[in-house]
Length: 288
Image (cartoon, rainbow, N blue to C red; front, top):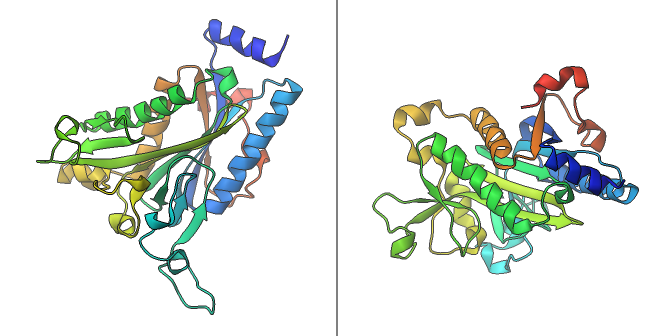
């Protein structure tokens, strides 16, 4: 029996496919996380060819400041010359202190950095549902549920992927949409139905970094964060550590065929696939 047939049988029986999840502490360089994602995808492609069931993976983290440009990005999405954005220009002249990467994810340009929680699921959809639209809508639902748990009403926009919140006193979607503020960006890619990249939820970052770009190519809307929509008392208590677990819990609620097995990664990483493994059976209580 093939791995795909075994997966289909497991889904019919209500069994959940395990997801080796690293909750990585500290700030992570984009290049390190991106390279590890690519290696995790390659590992799962090999498992497909070998007809091994394997398991899925996920990275949860915060990046050092960086701009990333997706497949649909345009040069004008950066409001300043790219070399001026980067950490150092030729001759050692300092730039604006941000790295810039061209990525293979969908979408245009966005920013990652402290105060923004990023979730990178490496999911073999052949074991779940071969439908990227379903997957992206599910990622949006994950964010919507986290916002709702804080008393914030988020919404989708059929024209622009991501999650939005209506600006206080602004126009909502029904009135033209100009008053919607983006709080979460979603951009994915897939190879042989194995996903890469994911979602980024602004919790409490310094939003000034978005002033230098056209976020996700949308010129007439602002970017905001969860903290902006909370009372002063709740905002003061909000932490990215808290939101990381809220996102993971919501992910399991939305994607009911998956079970996250979370490992806290506090020390230095080698950024190798061997570090993204399932916990031993005796430690299964670590699965959410």
